[in-house]
Length: 165
Image (cartoon, rainbow, N blue to C red; front, top):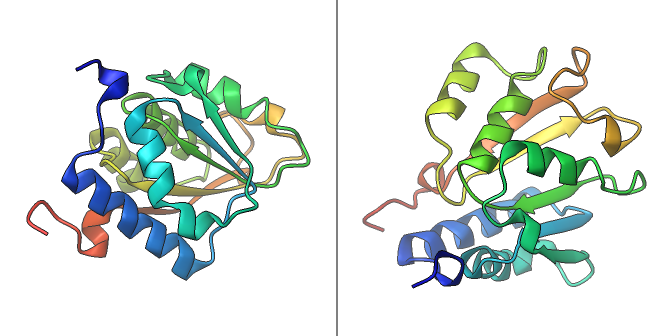
């Protein structure tokens, strides 16, 4: 089967559903969703629907399929300045590397957290950042201290969803 057509497996479905429930419980609702065009990312998006609600704009973007860090960062920099928050549903290793790179910004995360992000960013994991930016175009891991802060990384395993669940 072509990779882009591969569906989520059982563990991925459970993980995405758990993350969606957690987002809903936490009241996390992005202003925009950018989603890869791959089948499994679109299935993930469907499982997050309860947390997103009906009014969140969703953009399915073929360019996010297996995008590397530079491509993901470039896409984020093109979000209109009036959009206060965004959720990116994409693929590892690019997404993991982007999260690790942003977490490496001055003051964004502890050394231990940065090391863990380089080792593993599980399927369906969610990284939540606070960005103090006037414009998405200025998003950079080289931003001044305090501009980027990693608030939380949550994985399905932390929510009790494991290989055997």
